[in-house]
Image (cartoon, rainbow, N blue to C red; front, top):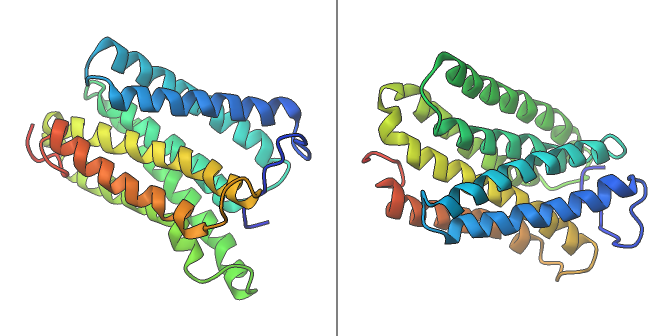
Length: 230
């Protein structure tokens, strides 16, 4: 199955009820904490606590996603799980002290995403060849991982500027993690008939919103969209 699995609020099958409803509940918590973090003053106690709860909630969402994906493999959603872990993990590590362990964690997350993206492509290409999905569909899914991987190239090439770049990196990773978390349910809800079936609106729209958010927040707090100033 390559497309979304339409949500039925009253029938979680083939998934376990705990994983299904727990996934939805924690996902709502994650999104509410993301909005709280974005709206609060950066560096404030509320911002830090909301951000930590958001990260923890995303971790639980990923665990419940894996539990459901074991029942039904949906490559785009599996890619979203890996990308969420990659983005949120990178956002957390960006603010940590520069140690060998932190650098290893960043490289491990990058390697994990590369492997996940490679596996996704091996499933996407046959689906294209069989006419199950349009040729552009995998790129739409892969664009966020590719943006994040490009960011890693810049980050790893400028390790001597970690202090200047860390705020911009943290902001961008948190934003792209948010985009991944919010795009998945939008696509599922549209597939289930709960939202207008305007696929490009819910697939491309969050990416456009992510670009705008990165530009706005990094201009305001990170110095520039590329974090070149402290």
